[in-house]
Image (cartoon, rainbow, N blue to C red; front, side):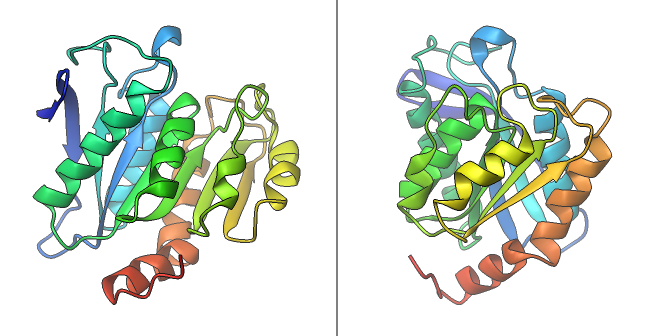
Length: 220
């Protein structure tokens, strides 16, 4: 499928929850750095979309500009923000009324969380493998939207312990879950990644934010 954008279109894939009436939210999940092989088919991105769909959340993956069949060229994270906004626009128009989550992996987490923190249509955030040694995530303190961060204990770009310490200063709306034995790409720990996401959106703050959004109770 294709999502229209100013530079042409984004190549995208949509995963829907199974069963009639199962949709309780919609999410965009962004991929890691385009110049380092990141695509919408990166395993952690695919598994995150799978986990979201399993708990009733429509999951949209797409290739950033210049990746795969998407038009345009890499823009250092600036133009990629517009790609995320276009994906949110598409979710809002194709699934009206559903609460929207913005998420991503590595570089994709930086772009998606930045856009999602500022966009009033987005009610919650999901970050996987935040590269805190490379990028500044202090913008997460500006909006108190429930945020799940899943981080490998052995992540080369920010071990879970360091990420927890760094993000603690940004507010208690951020939940950081470390995955023991996981590296940056969550290799051999995809089941734990999936279970963490499922739990957050069925039993944790993610479940509450979706219910609150459905009744327009938004604290930001």
